[in-house]
Image (cartoon, rainbow, N blue to C red):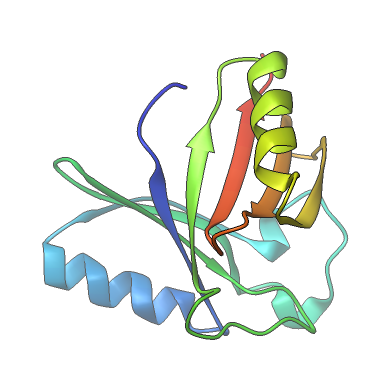
Length: 136
């Protein structure tokens, strides 16, 4: 793995507000915001200004943010996941298989439009993992 697990916070349409709040609270720096409208992926117009992915950093603190996609809801318990950036295909395949064996697949492991292999799994203890391997 390239680094430690990163908290990924998901919101019901108010990720931008939360991002600004945490920026002020932690005196952090927003490193990037990508909206659903910016993505090379078909999304409904009502999501155009919603955050698909954003990053906030202050020293060693690193948080990622997103709004939920249409017809999905966020509740306490599924509003945070741990994101892992993996180093190779074998590593992501092995972790995906191990975490999903007695867990629940939220998003099948697949190639994505952002140039990565990605899968999302809730393990048998209820912890949600975002597994990402960025291809070069």
